[in-house]
Image (cartoon, rainbow, N blue to C red):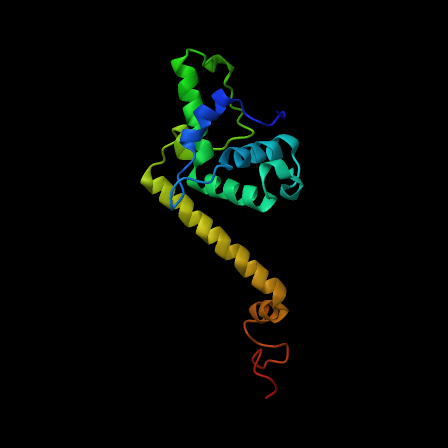
Length: 165
């Protein structure tokens, strides 16, 4: 047995969380494919480097994607936590969340803004963005600044942008 293989007891816990295929149960190599996924993430290798004992690398990768998309790993984690709680083996005193790695919307922190204040802040943000865009347009179009400075007229008194005469 390799390091990546799960024990029979662990497999008995894991197997019910794996979905049934569209046309019935997945093939008998399901356990080997699951172990291939575990091996890949344990070693940090590329999918193409999965040993043949777990099956074709493309099959193991496809199975992983199907399980990921179906939410199998999240359900398995929740099941493991529930089982540990049943056994009294959950110690939440070790749980820690660092604010440098998790962000929340200001509403999640209990910050509530008066609708009038929120509207004023949003209006100010829109006006600031318009002013920023106007400044960007002027930088790209120097004639716009000269027309503004001369009241729409060139230095010779003719209208800016209309050409001679």
